[in-house]
Length: 581
Image 1 (cartoon, helix red, strand yellow):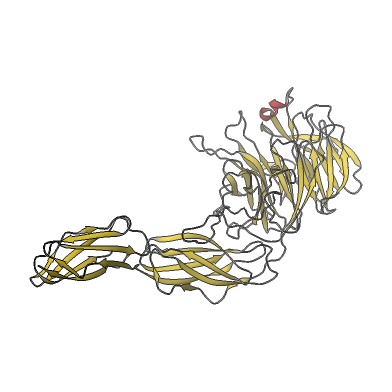
Image 2: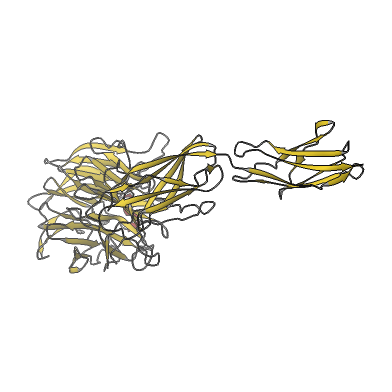
């Protein structure tokens, strides 16, 4: 398949639409606008039973996935090697579990965290190079190459893997002579490392029972020793809002940091002091918990991974600029062909941003998949042409109104129909009307039932997607009037004073339903003058009756009226009866 949108059975969706029809056959509503750009999604089943690290060698177009296999200290770990098309080209088997991967600046050497060493491999031949000495690690390392050195974590010795989440973990770095040096930075839990532009190093702390308020810290790694330049703990004075850390990434220019927080979603921070950025990213879909995050090397995209149930998106690709409101390209993974969620720290980009590599896992965490996603490389202009029209020409409150327009697209036709969003602004404020599908000829129809009398302005927007740029909004102001009403009377041509007059009638009101039953005014006009009779309340089925004993002979006219309300015009009807003795 060469489009993002898939059937739910296979699990890859460009946008998961939760559709509902508005009253009177109105437009389809999408819970979150979804992109429909064409993209490639290749999938390889990984030969691993656990996952510890992912790194991408753009110089040689290779992807490395590490299997820590830490159930026993004697277990053999492996590193699976793939090319950029998802084909496995080699498997590096290690004598002990491998946890953590990093590449040097030119991609010539791959570093992997072993139990007692920092393993080194030639990235052309995959042959082992002399390993670097490191402190014995029993919980799994995190590695990052920054400032010309490999930085790595090492846990204090534990007898049981269940103790790793609270073990004291140190931050060390390798020396040129293949020895290691302790940095002095340490804390509890499985500390994670990330390298960034400008010799930056970041360290994040997952939540654990010995770290109720976990930290995030940024270091300058350019010198012989690490210098912390920013740090933050996130809980408030009441202990709320603590970081639930899953992953972190530097932006392409190093000025910003994105953090996958399983509780708060995607945090966007300023690297200089780790304060909240002025504008953040939209929330993840309801039910999705953040698990991974990665910026593309070209600075265009942000990838956000999540653990989400069913057809809820697990992967979102959106512009890296948080002020760009282009809807995300969304993927939902659900099943044996895709996995069920993005694994923590399971996202990496190629340096040029042309490919995203995502590791997914099943719910049990026992199987893994490698996805190779190629976002569209080109965006095309879009525009609304010809303005908006509406029908019927005389809009009334409570009745269906159709607003029509046309969206013109440059470039190739989209793989899936695009959607425009619409709002109505009137005296009651602005209301979101959902989305309307753009047909193959570019036309679209927004259906609505205005509920207030007066002017209503309809605004239609196209937010763009990863293939098409947003269009300038188009608007139309419609004058909305009151709906009509009518009274029908059935009266005898002649009646007697003694028997009385019996009149039946029907009342109808168009548009919005009345808040309560209509009460009709009845007047009688005869040769003695005009007088008001008792009012009549209309039954639920719209019928009513009038019974009267006339006071004089000759023609008597009965006039029945309803004054109307805020949304309906009033109406009047009359019937004349010849009254005899």
